[in-house]
Length: 119
Image (cartoon, rainbow, N blue to C red; front, side, top):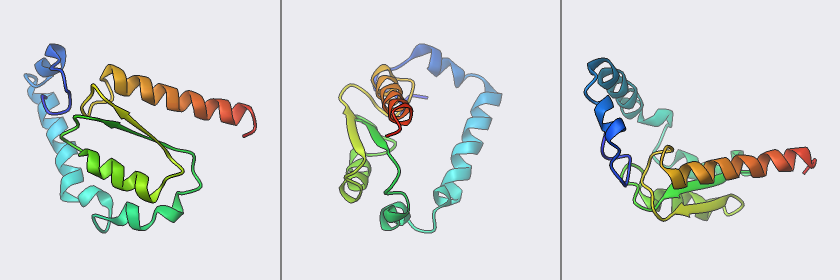
């Protein structure tokens, strides 16, 4: 409950006291780890970027993310320069951190406005 956030969140930490929550969380995490994220290789996304290159996207990365290191996001952006790349200077991994949340909402607003404008 500590590794996903830059700044510890007591409410989030308390979730770990709930055995049912902890077991469910561990099962989901391990399901993805055991199945290698459901990709056939570690570089599958990078090697097949042309399949999604046409999609408007924003890569949002917390500067202090220890779950998904910055280099992973940077490598993705290098092969997909069409995607916006946002580094949140005061965040880790969690989408619930204020800076990450703000960038995700802003990215969705940009996409919504593009759709409304007909691109």
